[in-house]
Amino acid sequence: MEKLLNDIKVGWFLGTRQIRRSNIWTTLLIVLIMTLTFLNLIVVSGILVGLIEGGQRANRSQYTGDVIITTPVGKAYLEQTQDLLSVIQSLPQVVSWSDRMLASVSLEANYQSRNFQELPNTAGGQLTGIDVDRENGVSGISQYITEGEFLEPGSSGTIVLGKNILRRYSESFGDTFPALDDIYPGDKVLVRTGDKVREFTVVGILDSKVGEISLRAFVTQNDFLSLSPRPTREVNEISLVHDKTISDEFIRDIFIERGFDGRAKIQTAEGATPDFLNQIKTAFALLGSVIGGIGILVASITIFIVIFINAVTRRKYIGILKGIGISGASIRIAYILQSLLYACVGSALGSVIIYTLLVPFFEANPLDFPFSDGILVAPIEQTLTRFGILLIVTLIAGFIPAWMIIRQNTLDAILGR
Amino acid sequence: MIRIQNLEKTYTTGAVITPVLRGITLDIKKGEYVAIMGKSGAGKSTLLYQMGLLDKPTTGSVMLDDVNTHDLGEGERTVFRLNHLGYVFQDYALVPELTALENVAIPLLMLGQSEKEAYAQALKMLEKIGLGHRMNNLPNQLSGGEQQRVSVARAVCHHPKILFADEPTANLDSASSALVLDVFDALHAEGQTIVMVTHEKEYAERAQRTIVIDDGIVKE
Image 1 (spheres, one colour):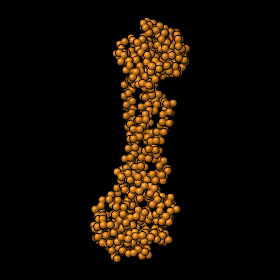
Image 2: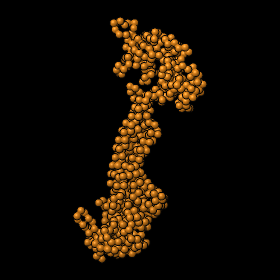
Image 3: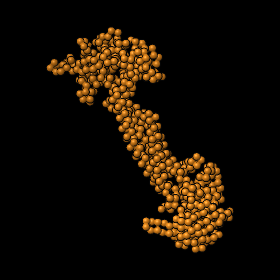
Image 4: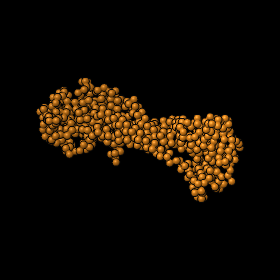
């Protein structure tokens, strides 16, 4: 143990001086390579995962809230709406909630000027009856208006359309959605459900990458009930947001414990994420790891070459050090120390760039993908894990060439044979 | 102090076998100052490397301070060199990234001294050879003579039992050579055992005894 500590002490002595007095430009070049490797390791997979994470985050903030309660299959609406709302209002941790009424409707536009030899300008959609203030409290939906304005509380006869109901927005998806042509704020649309028809004035268009927002038509709950009456104002979904002092699961479990499970579908935001999104996320993370792995391989080869060249060119001095009695372990430690310094400084610089530049940049300027706003996901624990991997790989890449040179015959090294 | 018996060293390159030392037997006493002379290729440096445990003889034995070095493994030889031997090489062989003080201090650190203790002892040694004022200079900031004196300081600062010097003046002008040999004289006066390889008769005459090697055997 004492010998090991002494070897470390002498290795540190040699290593720190080699680093301090080596060519500054060579050191900077190696540190730059390590920084780029670290960025490659974190950023590539972080962006790939971020494409999905951005969608999930938008889903939570614009649609599900922290917990969403929806109508089970086979039911027209949540039959215990009032009981559910009573529980929600009794929970001090719930800071906002929004109840939504849903009905499948047909929307028709340009019916006043239609030539009856042409097909009607129609599209299917889901009519959503909301309380404007409560919905804004949960999803801040009004901030996603891209044309016109949002519904006013208590307004009547007005409707806001999700952008994908309009062909000029949805045509990038091909014919995936039946959509309305030539509709702008101020135009009239007919909304049909069952045998009821009502005319609405379009007041705004919502721009969102969350499917549940972009494919829905929003009206006030009173307007909704005029088309689809419900005995005691039952709703189809309730999204709620808590104060983050408790987990999403805690809130979900309260409803399950109170016996709502089965009569309502109670899910956390994460639970409500479609499985295919999680699968894409896993696949992207794997892809990112593969790309990062190649980066690590390149970095380890770089470190190997740098240390090898360094050790080969200093072979004579290594021989002399051994000749005057300096242990091989001390000399190896000096080289390993250099490798670790490159890895640590490179990773530290990479982390600074990631957390002070790239993450804020992607938050402010997300990648515009059709299904999400891609952000850079770089959780600290994942960054630390990858830093650890880089450190170990660098350590090995530094150790092997030093070991190869140091194990050579001392006299041959001194004489350059 | 040094007892060599029937020492042979042969180098093999492919099918070519080159005998360099051919049965050398000699004794060097404690405190002796011995010069090894000979023509180029006579085997004097090879003999020094075998005595100094930098190389292993093909046959024969090297006893240093009553230790049969034949049985020592590579690691033990390194430790033995650190504890008992000092070296001065022909081309100074200072570590370029270390200052004069650090070059002298490094064997002391390896021996377990703290940095503070090692620096204090190294500085004392540098002052003794007149280079205290150059302690913070890197080797490339020193003249050849100064570098060789730092090399001598590094070789003796840990008080080795034997000091080996392989043509220490070969790359120096006569003034610098004289300064280095003055240091050797002073060390010898303090009782240091010194074995020096040289091809300069004038310098060999400063030693107590001269061993002449010719074609791998002692001609003295």
